[in-house]
Length: 101
Image (tube, rainbow, N blue to C red; front, side, top):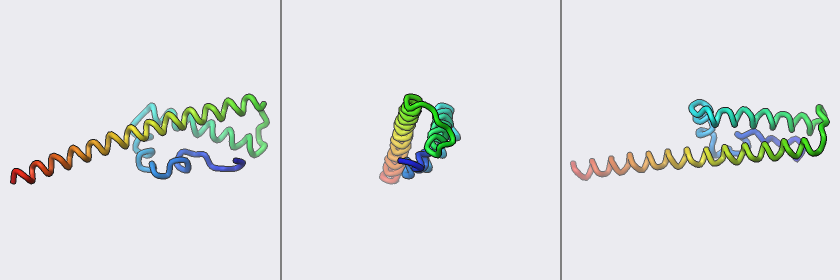
């Protein structure tokens, strides 16, 4: 849609903390994030009429943006799952210790 924000924070508001963490601690995610922002900015300039490339080029940019978004989404899910496993393990350890006391 014309003028719609597609930055990752708007696309996945429920992953705000995870996005922040992965940008700072995961080089692969950070590179994808930067590339995604660059592609999204270019598409925004095209929508605003600042740039006028071919339709084929625009479609390639949209496909690239979608690919990057999908990859980062799976990275976010994987990180969240890993964090939940740590929480569960910690809780089990706490309960086990409590039952010993």
